[in-house]
Image (cartoon, rainbow, N blue to C red; front, side, top):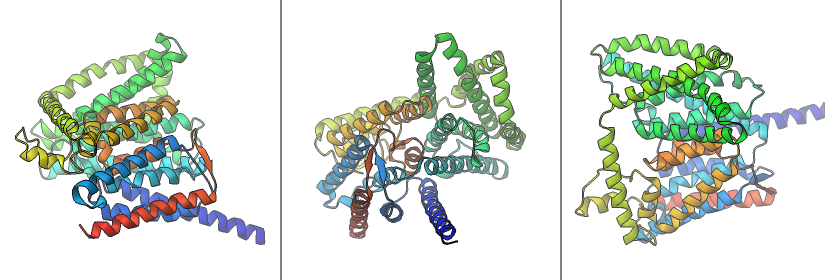
Length: 460
């Protein structure tokens, strides 16, 4: 009896731990970019949860460079503001080493469950964005590119794309299909694809294409070109149907003059979600059908370009922005102009004013505001993450996010990064085993830094 009671207490404590961590992760994904106060408080909760973990398995070749990047950013903030917590986005990014370390303490089954929960939550956020878009289109006749709950179409685009890659990796990793949540995961795929299409985020589409190319190259190394091609056709077919549906929904709401007509497409999208498993079985049974549907991707791409003719002009402006950032990087190579200072420098610098807080290239923005050391540390972290991942979909997701950050700013968005770190971080892979004392030391140190940030934040 005593043994059973002890077992129940352990099971209950594990359940409460997972429930608490999951709730914090949902909050981090939900808040979007976030603010220093909220994220620091959530970070303290994660540190408290991790402090009592007995062991961890951490890849320090990722944890150390990224932590040094945070410290370099704080040093840059101190150089400009005399307050390291005034670094705008830098104190917020301290949450990612904590999150990475916490996932390193989880057992394989716990981490798998956490991934599935985060993916399903991201799918619900994407579905809510679609519903919000339809509501404003039909009721208020105010439809545009879908920003969803994140409030920005480009952020929503890479969020949906990241969710799709994380889902594909989870399906690949959990090939046996066991688990209560796993039966719902396939239905999340069309939701991500439809949401991605409705953002008309060209950077996200390019990133997605780069990720699929990585999957093809990976499969080609194991088989012939022909086999690799036909193995990728079902992927392209799924993407074509999902994205095509989202584009038609967008066009019905925005371009037809009869926004109510998008309700028909919404009903079709709902049917597509419900029948998605059968569609996957159909593609598996009929390679020729998969090839035919995949070829429709050319029409989807053409329709996408026609739906957003301003994309070329936007891309040209981003190139100008990158050139402007490189000039500041060369002028202030050590610690940069300071976090949050590029916009001000751009406003009074006598050149074209871009009216945005971030250069639409995360590496150049990091170099311009924090210096070349911070930029090198970010590159080192990304290279290590890419090299350690052998699973095709995990590597594809990392590639897609990197490509997107060459054109946009998802790296500075708390919600997007939380989803990626949780689902594609894989800290235990090629990691080093840590005991209880080392775990307590790391979480205790990070908690003290969060407390320091909270105190310094009150002085701003």
